[in-house]
Length: 132
Image 1 (cartoon, rainbow, N blue to C red):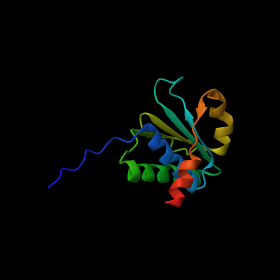
Image 2 (cartoon, rainbow, N blue to C red):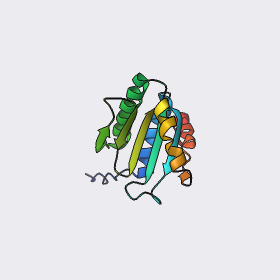
Image 3 (cartoon, rainbow, N blue to C red):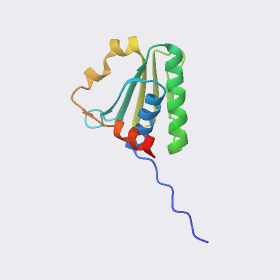
């Protein structure tokens, strides 16, 4: 009988890729992954996406949470914004997923605040996943 290899913890990049792909598959708009670690000590990556209505904001949050749990075993440390559905935040520690109602996204313009950080390519991961 052979021992099972230890299950490794998912990386921040793996969690972010799963979250971005899940948001995209559920019609998240303009999904981006930002490497904020060099300028923000509290986490490594932001996933930012938006939706045109509150029902879709809720759906995106639920689907991202479900996909990340299914593929990595991780659950958010905390979830904020599910009551108002204008800006939902899923905090995975090193990854924070921001799901905005499109009006709130325009107002807060989080990409402008972090315009100098690296944008991580995640669409190649989506294409690889679709092909497998």
